[in-house]
Image (cartoon, rainbow, N blue to C red; front, side, top):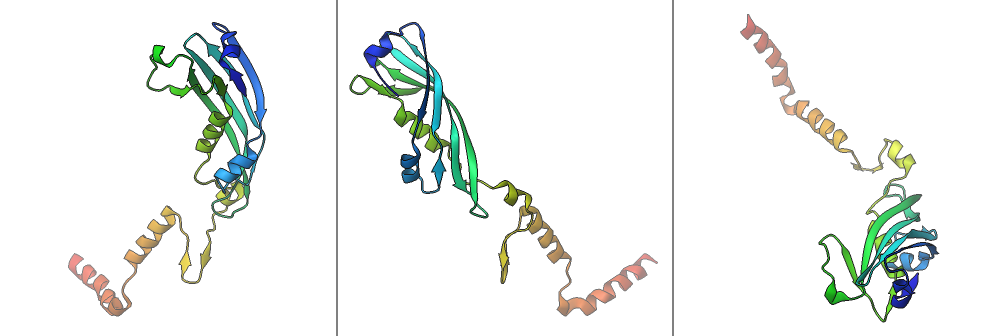
Length: 184
């Protein structure tokens, strides 16, 4: 996915469409050890070229295989990334917007592969949960420990508050009698 500036200038004031597949699997696995597999990355879109800049409107799709955060089974994570990347052909003449991603042209060639690689890495989630683990309400546990959801933790705390200290159990038996006597 490389174009020289001269090739792009042929499309000046026109729209250049592109549809490519890129194999980034090895590079992605090296960069993030959580990525177990990566499909071919499909990059499609258009480039709007004028004398000062080339704006690439990208749609990136593919699938990454990541480990489930609870069970470590493989989970297919679909990629669906939309981005606009602008390469400055004449850097001094262009006044860009704040939300625009700007790149410099190096050696008279625009290469989208590193940009796509970066966008894919930025889209990798911190953790994924497999559908089976998400539907399974039982949590891992062992001797003297167990994993709880927040709701389970709050319920356990409420039960602990309602429990009577065994050392004070005999006094607790007197309490309802005193309350009944006070109501009479």
